[in-house]
Image (cartoon, rainbow, N blue to C red; front, side):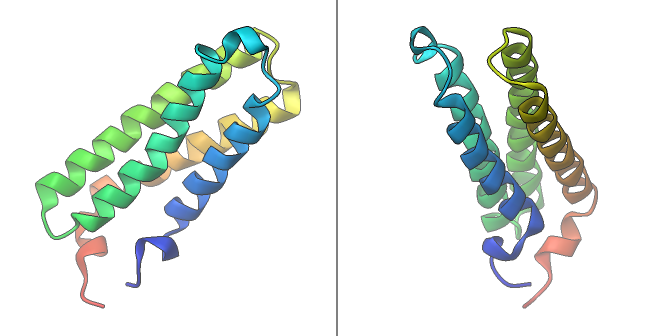
Length: 123
């Protein structure tokens, strides 16, 4: 199976967290401890929780629990993205890119949760 770094979901969630960071650098300064901090924290947590889940793949309940955490953070990030867009912190292109990316990550998490045995195969 390889390592967590070989997972498409890891690659996408890592790339999307970096993209959120890049885009959020242009948010208003007064949002540094508000929106900027929140969206960066939740987007990074998606990737981190996916890796933690993968590391616990031999323990199905722990695996699903960490994926559930990742899914929650993903859903939170999607709401922050919508809020940032409505507050005019994101343009149409940025909104679409981020929303599509995190919606895709959510779908991937769901598939992992439905088929945990696939990730517990011997390498």
